[in-house]
Length: 93
Image (spheres, rainbow, N blue to C red):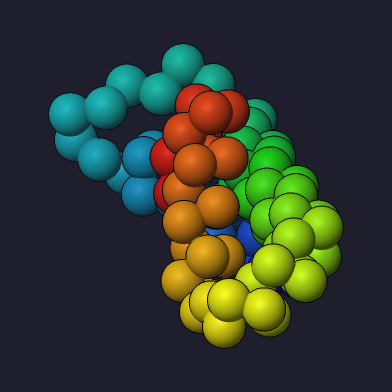
């Protein structure tokens, strides 16, 4: 995960406060409940992206002989695999 829990907490707190302060938004949940929900969504999203990256790493490792023998660009393949896996999972990058 690219963000530490304290950074996720701070980001969630900021977003919750921004939502609470917006004049056109009537938040039905408390600021704490909103912060927890936002933090949970951020954490789940980052975990899903980590899972996708692990699947990409496995694919690269699985096909490493072919990648090396054909002198393919590993980073370009990584981006392509990541997009395809994310699309298959319904995950937006």
